[in-house]
Length: 523
Image 1 (tube, rainbow, N blue to C red):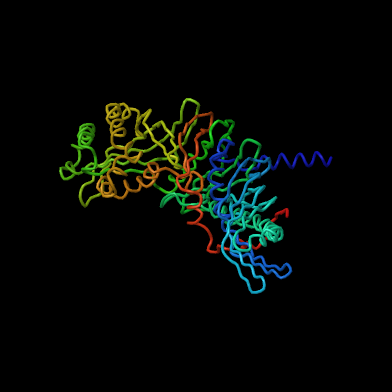
Image 2 (cartoon, helix red, strand yellow):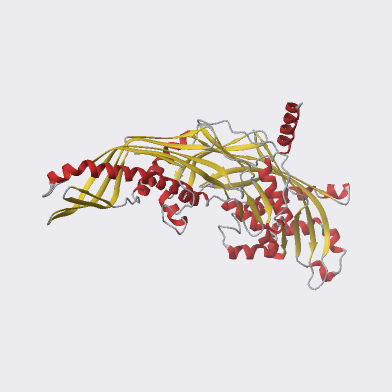
């Protein structure tokens, strides 16, 4: 009975678990690139090791070894791999560390000093980073385990007391090896818990997209690692900034990631795009108003000819008034993803009116427009961009079937107007980026600018949850039933060191972390 109750609770918990709108898979093919950049960073971090002075006495000889610095890391064998669970493991075997230190020797009244080079041979390091989500939904390095050992030390002593140093070298190198063993893991612990976490802090979690809408990339659960990949589930939901606590229920198909041929795969469900369009709809951005000379000349003439009968019945004072064309989306657009492509369905009202000066506007017609748009997704850098093309277009009257028949001559001109005038604005090409902000104001006034806020974002794209300095290259988009995937390789646009130095905490003390490093060092 207890087993049945546990199974029932598990099923209920699974039924209420939030589905991800965005998934990211990092495959083992990315690890060689990450390892190259990571080892350069690790070498620079090991150079920060500070070894305490080594002092001693043997008979009448007093020696002091000070200013010990790591100068280089030479690797013979290294491996970076995923470990099932939540870990990323770096294994370094049979490496060597170059060192430089100052020697001082006092024998009765004789003194000898200077700098000398040394090497630590047979260096083995195994460090594992445990990844998890913090309470804010941000991915973090939550734990670092470390094992490090140096099997032998070698120092080429010279000078007046060379024979003496050779006699003392066993004591000196053994002491240095012990101290070096004690310093490697604390440096790696600080690098993981402090420095790498400062890099992960650059991944967007809940941030604004523009002045109207934000996006939530919170982790829904801890990352899951297998032997070949690391999978992460993100909420992937947009929200209007004026309603930060609003959320759209996710009833879409959960994205599935099966491929492992590329370095990274990103999957987006229909929910990801639906939440964006509903957020802009709730923010009141999906509307467009063209008045007077903002209406294309040919369309102005066609509309006046179509409604000539209604216009001549008006008073002479308003016959020559400017024409107004207003489009307003009536319901949040919906996205449909199929293997054949992605479409967006839109229903909008189209109002045509005359706008006499200092008088109420005179409505000539009100109609409904159904449109279906083709949406092409592309990934540039780490920004997801969308380009829309008009696929199907239909208008009909809200008044009567007879008026719907009268609108048939307007079908083709309005479709042409949308293709030539509105679609470039939606894609951010006309009155947007290419024309500049001044042109935006010139084309449409406040309502047009209001529309251009989300479309400007479409041109620039929405950032994918990746750390700063890492971009996607060689992208391939694949459509599935209810979701799409983008496979890509990684490219470091900035060095790991550069990004970390820019974002690292103020404290640079390797031992600044309050928690002791969970390390095992072999002397």
